[in-house]
Amino acid sequence: MVSKWRQRVTKWMTRSLEVPPDVMMDLPRITMIGQLHIYIENHKGLLAFTDQEVRLLLKQGQLLIKGSHFVIKTILPEEILLEGEIEKVMFIDQ
Image (cartoon, rainbow, N blue to C red):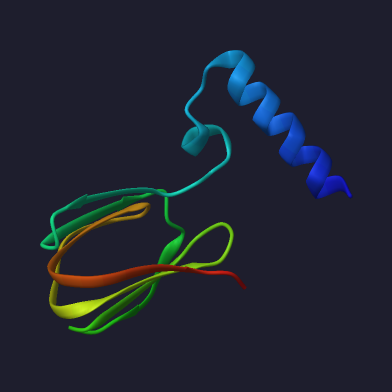
């Protein structure tokens, strides 16, 4: 019950203050350039990395990226730039 109330208040504040939802609600921001690059901001950590799969921890769940020939070009505490052939991007609820 507290979480529903919190979501309502957060949505109201986002609309009222005109703050981007990803900032206010702690959501990831994902930017893809074709199927070659993906830039993810506001993740909580790298869970798994292979040349075919990347898993990132989010505030709510995980982000799974599947493809091939993955290379991490940049990795910072809350940002990652991944290059390769991206086939699938999925959110996984925990």
